[in-house]
Length: 145
Image (cartoon, rainbow, N blue to C red; front, side, top):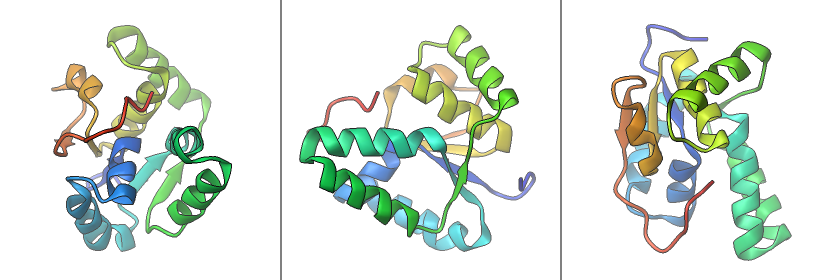
């Protein structure tokens, strides 16, 4: 994994901002344009699940399938689960008030030494632990966890 180079992990909230053209979508798009082709933009496997369930709840199964297909077209890398990542997520979950999914996503950013890009106020508890880029607040959608 590319340590030392500028890397980013997109939280599900950043992916939804891009998909729904919410505030911050242009920042996510610029990151993908500038860094995605350099294999420096990542998502956690958990973001695929979160994106799918949110879209299915809001718009139905067909929208969820389409959303996942669209996600796979973006220039980003998926970080899959393994035992060390799970243990890091467990440590983060034990020490910080985060959802399970957000703990996995934060552990992914920590593993890669990456900046976590998000709109989720839950990540505020990780200030000083994981570098963050906070996008403008979302509008009209409940929490992603």
